[in-house]
Amino acid sequence: PWDDTVIFGAVRSAFGAGGLVGGLMLSAWGGPKKRVHGVLAGMALSCLLGYVAIGLGKDMYTWSIGAFLMMLFNPLINGSNQAIWQSKVPPEMQGRVFGTRAMIALISQPVAMAITGPLADRFLIPGMMEGGSLVPYFGWLVGVGPGTGISLLWVFLGVIGFVCGLGGYLFREVRDVESILPDHDELQNSAES
Image (cartoon, rainbow, N blue to C red):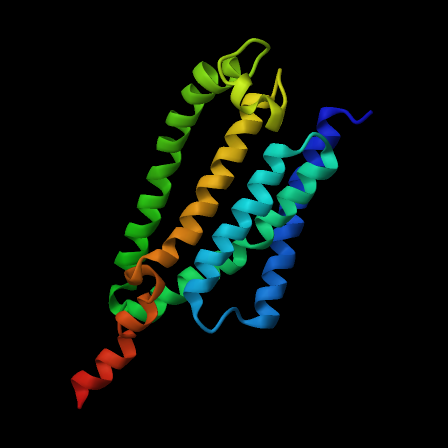
């Protein structure tokens, strides 16, 4: 009985509320001692509980819960990631390094849109319509018909993000980045001695 604007507003509000609650929790807690856990586990949980829930959801309530959970972990992920970078990169280089990081992140957004738009329009949406090529494989999961191709995309993104988050633990260079790379202040102190 809800119209699209109410649903859109509720889900967008849930995104914002999740980010706000996540930020308050991180402020009170301070995050994990080993910050890489905040990045990897936070990413895995955000993708599994957020993206997948949105993809599997069929109503405003499920989408809102998924949106809330997805954004709940974002402050943990971003705060932990930023803390690692700030502790490893010398202050005199942080502007250049963080500027480059931001540029790479911003460049990836239009690339992702250029890929996902045609992927959805030419493959996922028609593939999930009645009689579509993907229905025998994924129809049981997200349903069949309008909107299910995008639902499948959300599920795929969630599963890929979950696997990447947990997969980071398989690589020592990622898992132990905080102990492998010395903090910039440790390097400065050893250079001064």
